[in-house]
Length: 299
Image (cartoon, rainbow, N blue to C red; front, side, top):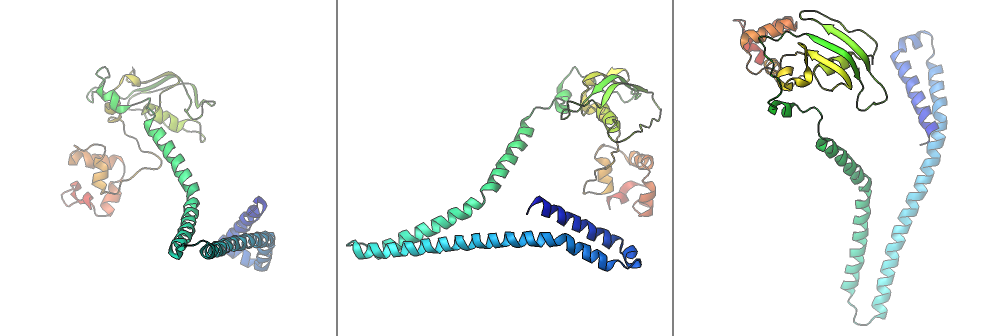
């Protein structure tokens, strides 16, 4: 199918979709016939192109079938010729050779059809293993084994976040800096909203605080300590984050809540549910047990 035919089909589908979605408006103005006529007009060139393509496909298929059966006929004729001219030639051997050639050629043809898929699978596997084998520049497990990294003390942790002249660009977009010399300080117990258009760096700010990436220049400090000096695992355990599209595992509410803190007590779970504003949902669903324990969340 040519690009122009594909564009016409796309335009026809858009017209049909708009007409169906806004069918009340179309019907109120009595434009059903106009919409149908316009739809048919858009598809007429597609039908002409498809007809020509089908004729070519049919001729090619017929030629291929003709070639195949002519080849079979030629092989049988050749086998008969050899049987009549070559003395002591066994007919069984001749037919065994003919069928071996026929079935072998058929199998090779069918196997060749999978060639493009094999190529795609090989290329995909190479890309997957390339990513797996590529060393991570920020390895949380490695930092946990590094005795020089600082462990976060929950008792003294205050949560002051500071960006000092931070420049950052994503590894896949080296030509564009998302942050250009950002200076920002968020003190403990402050509530700060980052507002801006898509791509201005709101999610990037959070990614850098969690140290999913390292800055190109400048420093990201938490409690006046560069986050690169922290043990990553202990740092991330004291930071709570809710993404735009939260990931929920196919388990109970309780198990999902315990995923980040397996040793949490009942009081911790209830407090977390209240802070996340989901207690109303839990109570409405009748998931909390009579004694106000999270046992019902297992449902």
